[in-house]
Length: 540
Image 1: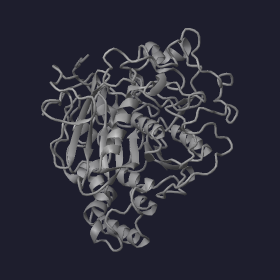
Image 2: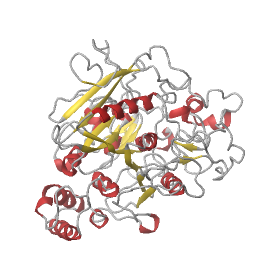
Image 3: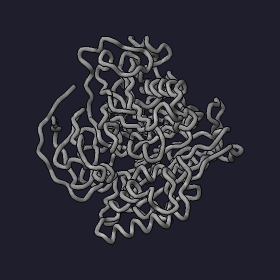
């Protein structure tokens, strides 16, 4: 196994984290992972499903294929020796990797369908920009990987999405406001084009239900899950946002790269000084504003620990979702014994995801009772509650009275694993479907797909009273708003465009400044760290 070491990082025993250039894996506590190297090629089902930050395993940099592959298709094409290039291609049964070239860059995605060719299934998008398209980083490398095991057990198809940039390219240079609440279009972001091609692929397939798509992600990937969902709301039913929600100009907390305070290119040029040197007066929200839908409300399950440094971004998104008539479900957790919380996903993440979104029919009350009894019995035999929960829901479930295979766990079942903070959570619609759409609510500022926005419907964020009409950048910030035309070499997608000037490979990471690693308000909100002297590996 190859393991590359990165500069001065830390590992937290029993708790996995990701800080853009610094990666620590809970599956392999004594090794650092960089690039395609991954220490979790082997492991038990139980270890895989302990549910740390599945969504945060990945890379800080991705290497391009050298030399490029012989074949460079312009539409998603099944991966072969001739076109694989930099994409890691799966050869496992029911897994398929697809690749194509977009704006001079090779793109990939990998699908897992537990019953390929025999059944049309709903789809869960697994957003993972840090994976650099590696199967292990996507959690798509083996049958006992957490998202794959969940897909097989609950009966949905999983699609792993990634990028070679190690960050998503968010639309319109990161500028979102009431004049441009949803920057959805080829002209705004190359990753919009990437999403569009995948949606078109799914629509043409007979194995995937392109009208029943769910998006999911943690931290930055959660933000991109929201962007994808609202840009393709006719395809997407619901979103799982863990570890982040929405940042709002003038309101705490700020994201590490100060989105909604600075444009992407401004932050890249000036770092945290961008607020003083080149603030974005046109910015109001990030990553997207959840405009009202005239067809159906969007389900959005927002999950956050109270000691996460981004706690509060979930509340912002929840409030705006409700304002626009969507079906928001807010899950607040507190750290507890043996659960550090902080910037991490919940215990039993995919069971919470399926249960909250209601991807399948809910389990019965009889099943609730027998499941609870199963966990109690296993705890009495010496297992901790998480292992007992995992065994009962994975191994023993089909033998439990009243439990139909694949039913979505109910809230009482899930709270056996981890209890919500009831006073801070909103679970009235937990597990339910969202059918039809009500009239546009008072206070709504926009409708999906419309160019007419109500600038008077909602007040601007604090300190931005004069910014409501702002659609152009401040003096000296000409690159803050409008996305440019396509770069040379983008002839594989005539309508697509590149990121804004100075932002081609910009970092949109939801990760902390280097001096925040030990802080409870920093990106790695933990109490126990082990300093490691490491080797600097420069790949640029």
